[in-house]
Amino acid sequence: MRMLARCGWLLLGCLPGWVLAEPIPLQPLIDRTPPGETLVLEAGTYAGPVVIDKPMILDGRDRATIDAGGKGSVIVLRTDGATIRNLHLTGSGESHNDIDAGIQVRGKYNVIRDNRIDDCLFGIDLQQANNNVVRRNRIRSKDFELGQRGDAIRLWYSFDNRIEDNDIEQVRDTVVWYSANNVIARNRARNSRYSLHFMYSRYNLVEGNEYVNNTVGIFLMYSDGVVVRNNYIANASGPTGVGIGFKETSDLTVEGNRILYCASGMYLDVSPFQPDTTNRMTGNLIAYNGIGVRFLNDWTGNIFRGNSFVDNLTQIAVTGGNTANRNTWDGNHWSDYEGFDQDGDGIGDTPYKLYDYADRLWQDEPYAQFFKGSPMLEVLDYLERLAPLSEPRMLVQDNRPRLSPEPVIAKAGETKEDGFDALEQLRKSLGR
Image (tube, rainbow, N blue to C red; front, side):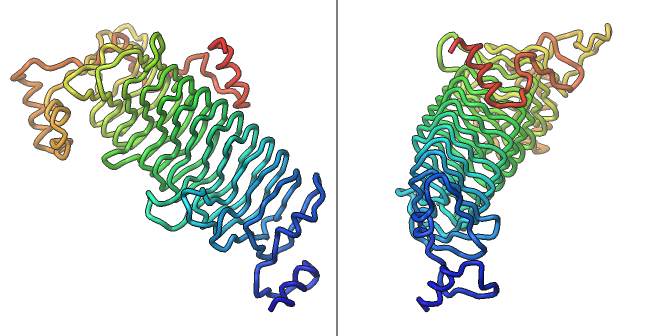
């Protein structure tokens, strides 16, 4: 058995049709590759885990598999300037404490692209790793319950990385913690928990991603100065389903996003948090959600301009008997607007006013949400509007409601071809 494996390693690629009884040891091949050179793997299965501690290119040409055999991380990258490409990585360990992953990145200026990662607890883990590129990887976690899976891509204290065009499914989260100046663009995530979760991570750009059938789309916690632009988020359902959520987060630019069929399109909790800052929501389509925008409290400093609120079951909801009128509502389209445009300027002749009628029942009594949208509450809402038994609250007033649902994007938010150009523009505008 051992001789067969050894001969297969020595004559790799020369004996087509041979079937090896054991994976080929990969670490000796890596150790024998000079720095700066390329190691091209022939078709077959190679044994991990392996450690790469020098700049080199490891290329599987879409026909080589590295299997860690259920132990540790498949590849640990402890170098600068390496490239890992065109590989199938599988069989990591199951330790959350050790962050067993397809690839652990502990360096800078590395490129991880066009790999297929499956049966790995975590996908790609970057710790104190700067200026790396993670592009066009396909990532799946182990076949565990949702909360027991690992994260697809994990950034911890990592800066100036590009996370682009990755395909993610059946993982737990993608997380960005204590990390700044990263570009997260054109990724796709499905059937997971948090599509993208920020904590204490400022000045990142999130652009052109597609997040469907996850519990939460994008959630930002204590992460200021982030740009969230032109993303598609749909079917974040369930009792905690949120399209885009903010907790104690300030100085955000949220524009051009499409948020559809979520339990709550947007969710705001004490945001913006920093004094004298604003959050700017411009040109977003918020449609067919249970609640368009949900405020956890009576807060201020959010500017909603040029958005389209279309056929949400409840356009705006505020917990605790409060209103959203301390925020700015200007030039939005409201599908339930009942006014006219006699002068033809595209702006309603009278303000849009949203009152709280029977919705007060389920907003003040959480268990009553079970009946939200039911015929019973619809009849109560009609009777309240016909002859209110109590003074209704005015939740929102928009003095210039647009009749057209077409979103309006501010010039300052025009998409740049290069994500770093847009991020640099943001830094200059902030004086940083």
